[in-house]
Image (cartoon, rainbow, N blue to C red; front, side, top):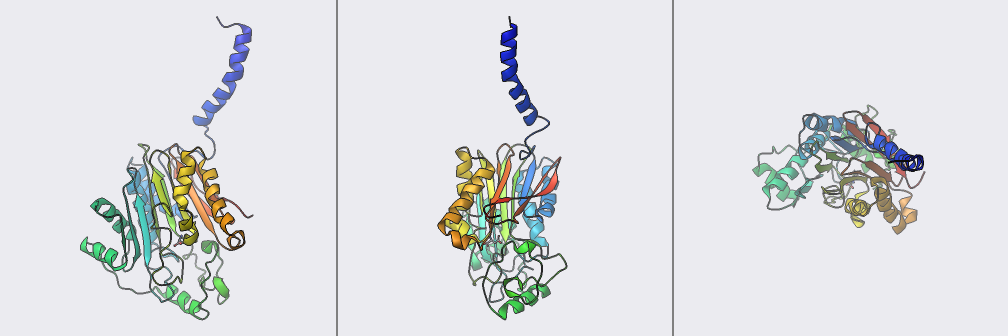
Length: 344
Ligand code: ASP
């Protein structure tokens, strides 16, 4: 029989349990979301999430949801994703994309031209089961052989204007948070953003999702850094750099200067940290710390942001600089959140 002392002791133990119960019931910690849930980089991720949500709300698979998110970004006019994006320094738009599912199936295409939806080529490659990574002309050949339409290499008017502006100085200097940069005609690295109509407002689109069955997948698509050297490939199509999924642990994606992400196998690092107990935010912070530690002075001028989701739906992010954001959509929320950052 429970006496008064036992009752008080049990209550003392019970109260936090009840509180935790509430936390995991109706009122969960702010960073934990009920599944299905989808998370994308940047505020434009809200639009990508909408495409993913159409799949997830119908109890569809995370892999289908993230592909739809990436496709919707590729179909939009933007500076940094799809065929209308800014070209490389020689005037060619070359695209990178990767996709990964809950069984560690993955597919990537890099340095691919003429294809409107490289993410779907990456998925096709993943499903072909033979290779996981194709680049350049070979990736294009694979796409065309599999029914993807070869589009002309024609810069959009806005991208052409930006490129000609850039050619005046030909200075390659990645712009921190380019999607937040207010257009400033003819003014150093900000010069390319000469359009103030709000269309050129996003960067790499990385999307990670947890579906109603509790399975994780991710997709990442980009035109890479504007005015890059012809042939340059960033982190986005590299599994373990710009995207990584481990269905037992979580999924992570990145945006920012790809070279820095590749050096530390960024998203793989994030997932390994989570595997050993870090929260998604702490894991993203640790990956950022490694980049900053390598060259603290250089880190002051560059941006990298990571965002991750755990198997339980906890979402966290961390960036080098202020300004990195991520968007979260599920049954209850549809919002963009600011990431914490190393430098403030
Ligand atoms: N991470 C991409 C790349 O390096 C670019 C970006 O996210 O802005 O290609």
